[in-house]
Image (cartoon, rainbow, N blue to C red; front, side):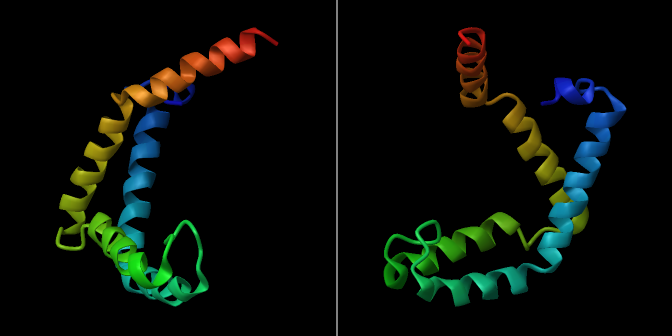
Length: 108
């Protein structure tokens, strides 16, 4: 995906990082609303939210709140999120998936 934006040093990738960080900070500012919506949804038995709504939902919602990193300032959150993006660039699982995808496409 990064190569499609022109590589790590490209303007396209820099714009992606900037917009991703802005989006993360906007979501953080509305974290209360997101968390309240998740609380309201917890009784609906939605599988992705919880396998056992009465038991797991609070843990899932707490994990979402933790990932918002609300204790950080906007600048700190931007640095944190750039780190998350960079960690994703070096992750092995997506690279393995790309290899399998390339093999599958070449076999068509």
